[in-house]
Amino acid sequence: MFWTESAKMVISFASSVIRATYEAATLTNASSLATEVVSLSEYFAPAESATLSVIRPMTLHPPIPEPNGPDNPGATRDHESSIILVVDDSPVDRRVAGRMIEKRGNWRVEYACDGEEALEVIGRLRPAAVVTDLQMPRIDGLELVTRVRAEYPKIPVIIMTGQGSEKIAVAALKAGAASYVTKQTLAADLASAVEQVLAASQTDDCQTKALQSLKAQTTHFEIDNDPTVVSPLIALLQHDIVSLGICDATAVTRVGIALEETLLNAIYHGNLGVSSELKCVNEHAFYAQVTERRQQAPYRDRRVRITARLKPHRATFVVSDGGDGFDISSLPDPTDPSFFDRPSGRGILLMRAFMDEVGYNARGNRVILVKKKESPPDPSEAE
Image 1 (tube, rainbow, N blue to C red):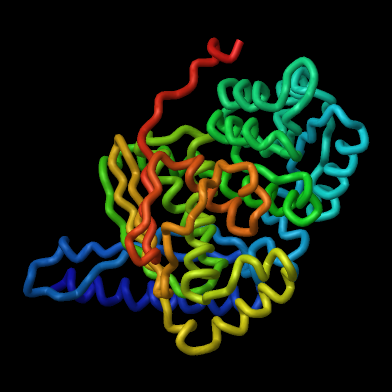
Image 2: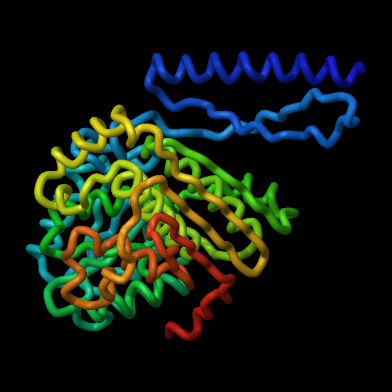
């Protein structure tokens, strides 16, 4: 009886903390402390129905209108002082890419003319991310991706691909690149890609060490159509993936990006039914329709359901939306060069490049992604 009453007191206190924290975060629009409530009802006898709850703090970012959307310029979050290395043998292209990155965020940009110089700069400055062209003298972009993957696994690499280099880009993604941007869409997509990769690459080493005893886990989530929930949810999953030893720092970044593409696709295109072609034509109109439909029936009542099954040898993610689905037979080969510039091409390509298995149900509103445990790269193989 004593434990039951104590549990009720803890639950009451926890509820007030959660409520006060949420209200403070809403009023100040500042970084807030979220709470993860873990049920420990098994500690009580069946007759004692009270449930003790434990509050585990987790730092969340401030609410933003839409991730990487037109109403959210300069959303650099925790990366304001990060160094971004831009690598291109063309001085003009180098500076153009650098200015696009600096304009979007408060990042400091450094430059290198090819892969050889880039490796020297990386060894000296340890940038937060590398943005590189593919076709360069001495060490090209593909070899640079391979070397960075082996020697600096915590530094993500974004590749810039031009006309005629699509096959090399696919090889670079398979070799370890964290993302890609076509040079035709550089102005619209480069800074967003940098922000996405930096967010996905953040891991809390202390929390990871605390979770080393985790052996297996199945987690179920149900979220509404708020895209700002996606990044914190993925961060939770990334911690557990690393703790189980399924992925190293580079691979967990890639898994995070694949999951983000999947979840945002489920929200925007699945539940809300907003066309990817609209974003390509008019990004402001795209997000305006997203905001509008989040308030309209039947879209507002649809949910995204996520099941994560984690074991030491593999991670399986099942993502379902409440939309009408699509004809999966209409999906073209994402590695086809003509697919690179299509509005829906980038997300599908990243999902298939970063996960070992990607499959859909017959209706097309549920996707299964599998990431198998991989052996760490041998640095000697990159020499």
